[in-house]
Length: 258
Image 1 (cartoon, rainbow, N blue to C red):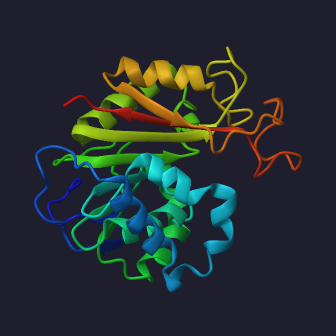
Image 2 (cartoon, helix red, strand yellow):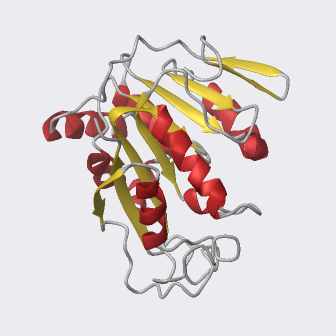
């Protein structure tokens, strides 16, 4: 539970609340491949997702979630959840025994203004929609998975740059149970570019991400190439019409040691 023992957030003068999750396990859960696949398939087939299902193939949704290993009963942080595409799916996967925290840092509150009412209208009883009171991400009880998609590069877009990333990764580490998983999906920049393109092209060098996260104490636990696109030469910004929706993306999984 985050910032409040009843999992609430104050946004634009409105208190948003969700049913509090059950007491967490001491260490992160481990699901069999079949259990994960069944939960993913059920969540993706939910009739309530009819409006979003057309994007599943492009996002390689089933493959990415299977790689993450998320399953029933998990507690998950969806950091900077955009329009809530992944939040809705994760809610279906973790089920009644799990919980999803859709988290926006204070400086990202404007991005929550449309998403929070839209998700609230869906009455996801196992989901908390939360804008933090400051830039940091905090948890009073650790979770199984921290998940962020196409946002990691934005964390670096402050005057502090690398120092901000260091602080964020330490916060993620603290938020996870021993054995917990940290999944980072983002737009790839050219090898050796480091953080140079984070604000201009909204890309980040995958090697820089790996080095930063491992520096925080995580173990690199694998990568998936399902979103890689060798035709993307990394020169254009991700919103350029020539590459938008088709960028070369990396999918990294890190593990907090038990």
